[in-house]
Image 1 (cartoon, one colour):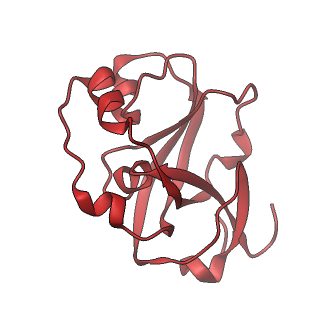
Image 2 (cartoon, helix red, strand yellow):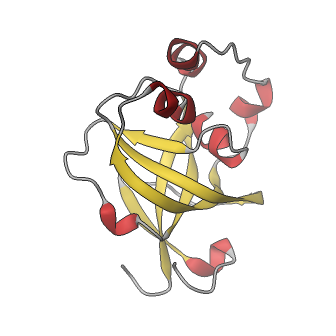
Image 3 (cartoon, one colour):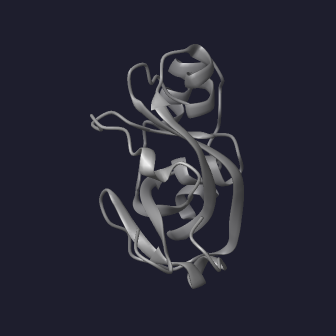
Length: 146
C-alpha cells in the first residue's frame, strides 16, 4: 500500500452509482483467480468511468427479478470518483443473496463486499485506470488509508 493513498477501482456507469446509493454492496470480478485479501479493512474508492454499460438493466433483472429503470441522469452524470467504502470481506460468491447484493449473476466470481459507503458530492474529477490503482487520500477527504 502506498502511504497517503487509497486503492480505487473504475467501473462502467451506472454500476458505481448503484454502489454510491447502496443498492449494490458487492462489486464482482470474473477474472480474478486470487482474491485481493489485502483490501479487507481498507477503504476502496469507486470511480465512474466514461463508458456506459447498456446491458445493466437486463443483467439486474436476470439476477434479481427486479425491474429497474435507470434514470437518464445516470448516463449524464459526471465521471470521476463518486464514493468510497470500507471493504468488509473478499470472497467467492455462490448464492442468490450474493446476486441480489451484487445486482448480477455472480456464482464463482470474486466479490468485494462493501460497507460504510460515503458518497462524494460533487464527484472528484480523476482519470481512471484498469484494475486497482491508487488515489491520494486528500482527494477523498481521508487522513489515513484504513
